[in-house]
Length: 114
Figure 1 (cartoon, rainbow, N blue to C red):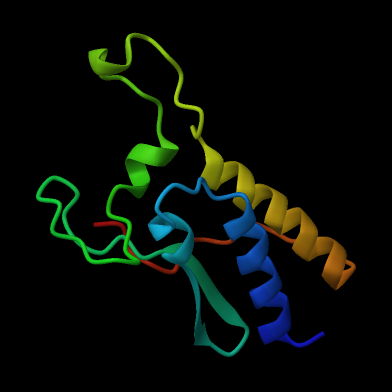
Figure 2 (cartoon, rainbow, N blue to C red):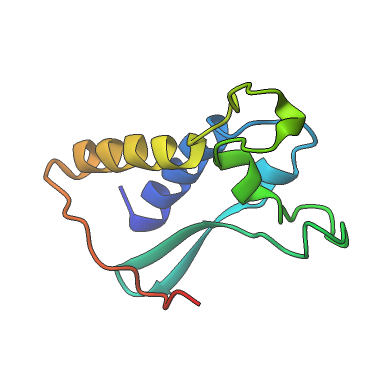
């Protein structure tokens, strides 16, 4: 299986586990080849979630979907999508190890946190 085929499979795997309402979050989940043998799996967060100036296919609200609800607006209820991204990526990593018939190590993030 080629790298492209493997990464497309991982993308589909993540997208199937992505909460779906309008589809923006699912369709904003993408893969990008950074350099040979290096790929990035990410959600295109687009615009500013507070201004609601984002365009279709971009999900600036992704952190709110993945995180714990702390606002009193939710009356103590748990976010049903809490940690969906983390869990999906961990499962995808396990799937990738099986496809490659090996083990994967955690690396460092190639992006600098701002």
